[in-house]
Length: 542
Image (cartoon, rainbow, N blue to C red; front, side):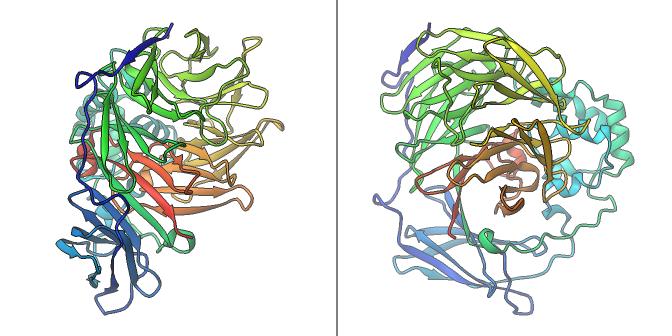
């Protein structure tokens, strides 16, 4: 049975309120023009204004005439950052934006060396294709990207080999079941070190980088808001939007903190999970406004009622199973089957499980193959359970009535399916980390179709169908971007993010506003070059 735990006083509950302005968003505007060294207008330049009091930053792109406008700001002092790959970035502190707004123009000088400005995938693309590269991508990019100086430093084969144990330690996530470290088992440290060194991985290699083109169309008019969360050790793994209030919720993985964010002013309220150190992993709301969470390191599942502040803990999962992801419907909400059960994957248990919230009954269904790890999961219209097996090229199908599991092999031998989603037409959409593609499996037809992503070696992590439009959102943490795919036109739109090392995890959609949300979860946090985790909101102005 479930154990009910009520938050009492300051023992299991505390809150942090970031001082904010009056109720609604501000009305001030910061605007101006961005030009190059010759005074010509620069398009596609990110101009970011960070409110240091509220710890939130709003970013927009300059248009074809070099003009930008950041609206809805509170009167305050801002740190303004101006950035486009191929130009020397600018940072200006103490920019005062009053009630009547402010104007600032910027001139960017061209940069002769753009390598350190490029996202991780540009570096990974220099490595030769093959089984070793696929294993390297699958095992070494699941926790962080190779996007900072530490991960791009020139090293000898021996130095790379000596770094390998440290990578395993990070991937273990402090768990007795070794967390994601098992994905590195197929990598021989000496062989990996020799391969990386032989291929010149590091800033002194003879790479030829080309800056990405400036954004156009819908991407040019997007507004990105970044919300600071936690401190230097924060692991903001997954987040979700409350469908009843529009509040954003994020989980801090290691301490087990649930953090509620007011999207207007970043006022935050924090709730301590009853299971400290439980590994707060996946967050999903159901249509009743209840937030469900997997506690990966403690083999548990929790439900949380934001209205009452109560947790329910479900703890009848097998030891070492590593409860991971929930099956959700085409709108991203927890999907209950006709028996009232929800479904989830067990990353280390090599199984999927059903949970009856009323009785607390758990039933686990092992996968017939020991290859791979159950990751993303979905239910089709017949209530068959589909789950991706990360680290393999398998997608398994479970018939809960008979208990029979059917394996479906993806087209590529080195495929590695990640967090899948299912649309209203019973089509599975799967990010393939092994080939940097989005793969569609039509359940009725039994056919696969692969769509190469715009950026090579971009480490696609999760896919999420937009139930309102049928479009697919893809998290690509290796490219500092989020993609939108239109199945009708079979075209991608690239939304590049304003900050480097933007390792996004999972998309959540606010259907009231159409805003797209995600969290930045690079472990360790310091690899992002900032002393906090972040939650991001992508507002599509057009």
